[in-house]
View 1 (cartoon, one colour):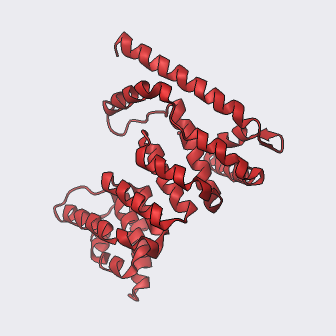
View 2 (cartoon, helix red, strand yellow):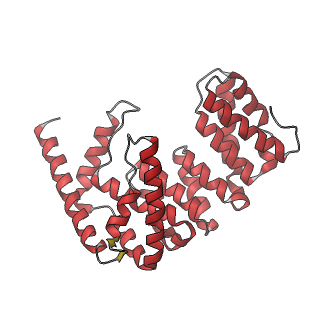
Length: 281
C-alpha cells in the first residue's frame, strides 16, 4: 500500500471514530438499570473467534439487552436510526476500503471497520426487537437497497424477516436484493413472509433449477443456499417445494458431511411430511 493510500485509510478511520463518539454521547442520554443505551447496544456485536461457551454467554446478554431496549421504549429508535447513517466524511475512505477488500483472497476474515460495526449493532438490535422494531422498516429497506457493506445489507434482510409486516414494501425489496446477489438471509426472510411472498416463487424455483443443473453436471453447489431456497419455497408454496424432493434426495445421496446429511434429511422430512409422503429414514 502506498503512503497516499495509508494516509487515506488513517484519515478515514479517524473520521469514523469521531462519528462514533458523537453517536456515543447521544446514546448516553437513555439508560436502563444503570447502563446507557450505548452499553446495552455493545452486546449486539458479533466478534469472531468466540468459543461455544462464550457465544452462549453473549446470546444471554443479547437477550438481556433486548429486554432493556424494550423497557426504554420508542426513544431508542432515533438513535438506532442515526447509527445506520453512513458518514459522508469517509465516503472516499469507504470506497478505498471496498477496493482493498476485493484484492483479499476469498474466505479471508476481515474485521469490520468502525462504521460497519456500528451499523451491524443497529441492524442486530432491530432483528432482536422483532415486531417491536417495525418503525425501523423504512430505514432497513434503505440499508438493503444502498448500504456499502455487504454484511450489513445481508443482516438487514434477515432483520426484515424477523420484524415482519409491510409485505407490499418488503417482499419486492427482498426480491430485488436477491436478483443482485443470492443471499441465504434474503431467502430466510422471504420464507418468513409465507404466502405473502408468493411473487418470489418463480425466482426461487429458477434458483433451484440452476442448482439442479450444477448437481447433474457434478459441479460444486452451495449446500446452505440449496437448503434455504428449498425451505423458503416450502414456507411460501408447499406444493412447489414437493417438486424439489428429487433434487434434495439426489444431493443427500452424494453428501458425505454428517452436518449436511442431517440438515438435508430433516428438510426432506419436513417437505415430504407436508406432501403426505412417507418420512425419509
